[in-house]
Length: 364
Image (cartoon, rainbow, N blue to C red; front, side):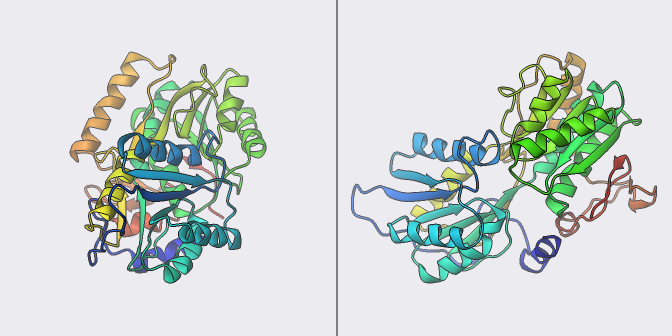
């Protein structure tokens, strides 16, 4: 998986404001008054309480705000051959725009796109493009940094547990940003990482959180698609930082905030560009300024002082005066990896394979 992500560096040359670079693609043909058919493909249930739910909320936003669009979805589609079959089926059913929302859908999307040149495909978190295929993702590390501030202010044990999916650059980048945020307000904090090697497994992800709580953590953060880790924190009377969507419903007493996706405006904008024939194939990496990533409302346990500090940092991220990965930044051994005043490039962020100082764990 790390090799796959490294290959992204050869393909992604720049991140655009919304759609990328390349030649304009003609909008889909349709009869007067006919709705444009758009389809979404999810790797888990649309009601999973996390990743796929975030994308489906974006789809619902499209339905609500674009009466000229018919937006449907296919859920719990495994990556691989099944995905290619489902994507082909959606294309053959007259869907003119198809969003494939899991990393493992990348090659199936490219394969199907070759057979349906008049359909536009947009793939989430990948790096391959084609004349009728673009990719998209967001700078979630900006939200991670802010949630790290909240966790760093909240912890009493100075031990934060982090339930992590796979040791790939996307996840490593988030852990590092979270840790930098936490250490910006609490230099003594340690972030313990436990890998589950799953994206969606409520039981194992909850158990990982329990293990971290047993190891002294009093705040649980996560890069997982289920609220299992937050539920573990709630059961133990501790605190949690959710991901993908506001997870306070699953752990109302524990939840401090969540790093959340807001896909609706992006989906609506991309669809309209395609309809208007103005869409260009390329790569999109949305930011907090774009409102693609954000943090959820604060939970009742968050103090007013913490809110003020976090809100101030958020304003600086949005206006560009705070760059999360600006040095000095040290790695786990104490060696300076990013010199003072220097900022890591997007190329470096895309191949992150080391932990910052303060993280306890290994990248296997």
